[in-house]
Image (cartoon, rainbow, N blue to C red; front, side, top):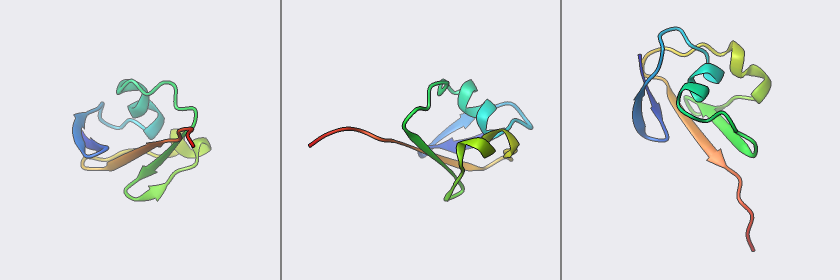
Length: 67
């Protein structure tokens, strides 16, 4: 199925959850990241229970340090 990740189209396995999709797309280390699914922030403890459907939009925001 096709999803959008940070405004780019990607293909992931049908019926996967948010955690599985992130791993498939190479985001196995998500420390310091916030993830939104269809403009709703999803707490990390809910990633495995959030099933994706075709056309879902994921946004990943990485915290950075700076001054």
